[in-house]
Image: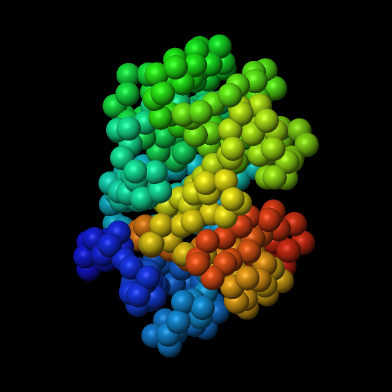
Length: 327
């Protein structure tokens, strides 16, 4: 059953998203022991859930404390979140790495076209220096799929990176420079460029790196330093196998198998309509072997076309308030 479900995930359309999501929900309610227990505590009968707005979303913190996994065999890979010393990190056990690869490769192609047309340059310090980063795994495959001789990772060798960027600009080679926020800001503080053929894409990542700028403030700094019209963004996390992208307008667009709902930050079971702000629930059907219904700690706004904005993070009291409801 799960094989057929998995095959249908990446061909889902807007018209059949909800029926497929409900099918995935019932599959996971039966086979994911953590999610099943969560639903039992809430006294939810999966067969009585008839809409995606009625689905209980699993708090994202469960990936830190529980084995959120479906399958009798060991996972092929375990992705882990970054975290400060002494802080519990999230673990996403992935039964099939091919599912993850299909998700990010198909998703990337949907937004940016054929990878082979790009040179892909990655500035991901800290992520490269630890094990288990889903972001590093994804970017490594993007680099491989680009098949460009100059594609690759750069750690702290900024001068070498700038030389490669300049060479690609000279040859009018379409290039993607993807980096974590703090590394791009560091690069921007050292260099002023005028990029015509390069997409600059930030993936977030400022926690513990000094004052956190708003996304608009950060994008303005990068736009001025790199001489581009907009900064692209990638929205992803350890607990998700899919990504959403923004091409600079502040709105993230998810792939067809991913959808965002907005809930009341103080009532995790109250879904708000589009064009309202609140905390984000994410449906990621690519999470077929873990949990596809994740209650995140991000705050945002959903729009009628399914695009969404990120407005910030829930504070500690909001997170604790939501978690107390499931103890």
